[in-house]
Length: 133
Image (cartoon, rainbow, N blue to C red; front, side, top):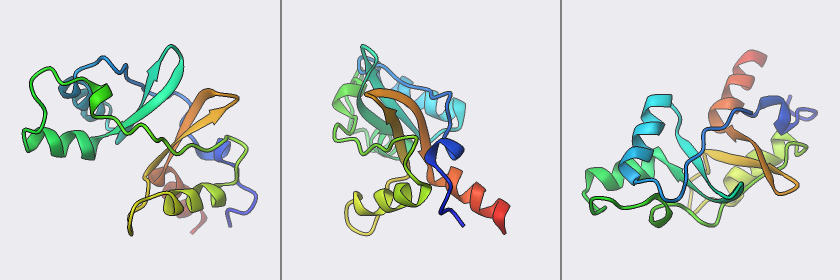
């Protein structure tokens, strides 16, 4: 079903990103306002991390951040990425193989030649699967 489908076919190209100097509470607000679950963290047009609604929201609710905590101290720095030319099957494998325990990575930044060109999520993949059913 997904054998010939490329990441470029499903990825979101208009990616909302966040600066590492942004405060975590405002980054979480951006995620909620845009109804997205993750944002790549960009500095000087370079991907340096990613923040998720789960991580930010959970830690904000538990009061783990001091007032003014910046995204750079909350982001995941070891970001798993894919290329737009990778197959969707390879992206799915990457979501499983690079996650801790029995989890999956829900969003993968799409990077070509060192430049962020999109993001693909498990939701993008599920929507494509639904269309095939």
